[in-house]
Length: 257
Ligand SMILES: [Zn+2]
Ligand SMILES: [Zn+2]
Image (cartoon, rainbow, N blue to C red; front, side):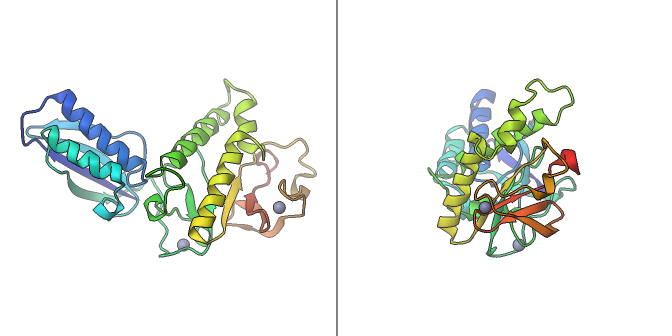
């Protein structure tokens, strides 16, 4: 991932609220197409321009052919708000985030999320590296807003259940690890739809945090089909279970490791 700055030159009369609103709207359209990552975009005024600090999944992420129709529209709105088209400056590689997948066309994908991972939820199954969302067709609507909103909810629940003093003792963890929770049903629906669109298998990574019985945890069966699914060797040092029939991956509950 790359740290970059977007510079919005002021080219006509504007006010701070109008400019801020136009910039915020443009950045939102980029978020919802996977072109910029994260949730915080520090933006400051510098003499005759506004500057926003952003994280890109790859250097060409803001190429106009990756823009959704909403982003193209938002670019036009910048002009109405007295701002020029943004100028991109790459500052360097982000040391705090992972690398985008090198494959041109991964032959299988994994839908995987954890709190703190702001990158795409779609990973190349071979390299376990994230693939930018703008390379895929949206599953609904004009961009990837639905999938990114799902990711935000997954991460919020994950963040809660990671805390020692949880405010939602079981609800957050159940949502994350129960096969049929609303969260996981939606996640599998996204995976299935992307698999149909891309014509490649898309595995859903089912989180496993706690277990009723650690002695039998390694022998548990696939929650989709009830078959044995324990791998001889963990995949990507993370997944102990894989069902090729149900396109599911999971791990031995963290509590039992
Ligand atoms: Zn790859
Ligand atoms: Zn199965």
